[in-house]
Image 1 (spheres, one colour):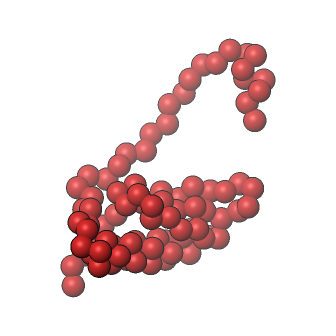
Image 2: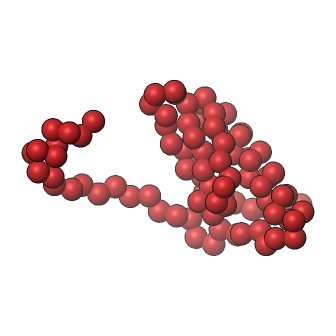
Length: 86
């Protein structure tokens, strides 16, 4: 069996709880879960189904050659705008 590795993004949902999981290398591959552990399991299942679907349709399966990088940046905003930040 071949082994593929994909980076996933777990975005917390502060209103509903849990996480939304996306796969940058596989647009449209999205799942949700209540915990990080469940999110990892759901991501594996979603990626497997997505890749199998691409292959079944005769489409190329993207391979992640370099993991995306996540960074944060600080910005300065006017006080009038800052008062509107939720």
